[in-house]
Image (cartoon, rainbow, N blue to C red; front, top):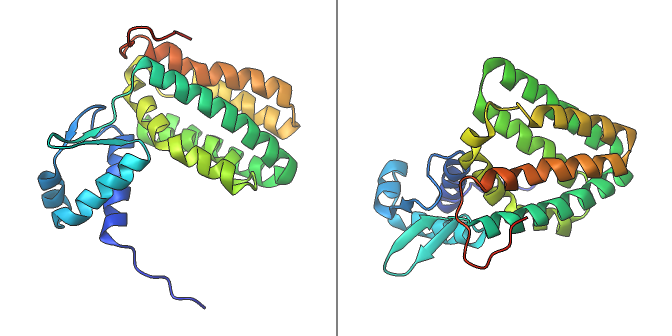
Length: 224
């Protein structure tokens, strides 16, 4: 019976700007002009500034005093940490969701695969990226642990933005990842967690291998 309150301008700007970063409309490290965003969105600078501060908390934006706001610019070491974080969390979420809501997880996974099929047939790389994200998000949506889900939220945007920025190095959408998604879907349906862990490891660390070709390595950083 409760009336849903309309979303604030700041929330709307956060969603629009997050999508623009994740989909590569803003490049990694690019300066984000408050004035231009305010003009483009038809709002004042206040909700834009508040949105940038929120996106800084999620790691997508870096606000530098007296210099401006910038899309985050990860190094190779940053990507390595993201891969480690994702692999640890996603495997735990898969174990929880398999135990607690296996039917719901399988249904969501199969829906994501169907969306991938449609995206590949139409050559739509953005739709494929959304379906890919939905595939992996399913483990967290069905794990039944809000802390695990919230932990993934912290890095989900950064992971998606990095994946988009490296899309040219990956090649055509689905070239390598699609067969792995099919394998993972079968293993999830069969509850074969050991085999799933091995494929997930290969799947996640491909991002690291591709990043080596494109991102800077800080002095003293280790390579995976």
